Length: 397
Image 1 (cartoon, rainbow, N blue to C red):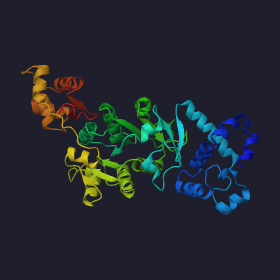
Image 2 (cartoon, rainbow, N blue to C red; image 1 turned 30 degrees about the horizontal axis):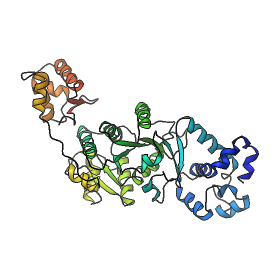
Image 3 (tube, rainbow, N blue to C red; image 1 turned 90 degrees about the vertical axis):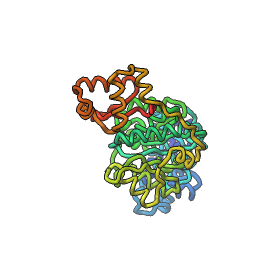
Image 4 (tube, rainbow, N blue to C red; image 1 turned 90 degrees about the horizontal axis):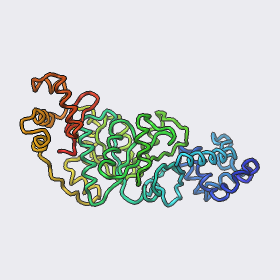
């Protein structure tokens, strides 16, 4: 069948002959993407992906059965689609790597449901992206609280000071994912964003700028097993999550409801025999209920001390950073008698406080407090979220 494709694919003949296996694997990934185990069984049985497209129609019926939903899919048309796909992705600076390539993520290859190939958009060689250092997944809720944000950043900062520097893997979503990716780059770690869509369909669209930055940073990449022009449908997220869990030696769940996507990734990681760690939270906090549940079930280890976490992750010891004196830094920056000092210390004392509450507590006009908080944020002392909640920058504490 593969030979029959040559009649109308003559312009691509040289490409086909030199990279036949990659093209056929790309076609299999598209056809069996939601059931990769079938693709693995076929390759094991026939010896290669290209062998499937060389079978006669009667041989295909014998392989799949007379009533298989895959009848008609194994055709020269799929080869043509793959050629155009690979060519299009190349124009975007991306490539398709197969499970047989040495640069394919080693740990992911061990999973029975690993994709037979993935699309990669990155500036470094595949081995330097996936296999040069341990990969650690950091995942959690989209509704990340200030507590979760602070500890997500502190956890990644601790890993950045470890003897062995890991690569931080997450899913590019709003909340925990983007916090983890940004913290990784800020602390000098590499990061991989696993997309629930094709690499030409960045989701969410608000992260397009960061996605471009990630793809162009050495050691970092955007990856997906979805063909180009695939949107981020709801059903796609679980398929994406198993890649995050499968390619990492450990998963850290920062915050999650009991039914969140982070919980799915965490349970997948456990099913693959990977280490799982959860940030414990208040019993009555809905954003921590998933983490607390996994700890209660003894499926995950609680994160109680950052140095111990780093060692448990197999990263060696983490050099302890000398804690700075916030009061001294504020006084040096604004002067001993400045109200900015009192405001900064009040924010440190009450992590979830917001600007209206600060105005009430300090007995100062709202507009004045708002301006002062903006100045503290501009000078790098605090972070302010969309709900006007203030928290001390973890680089300071």
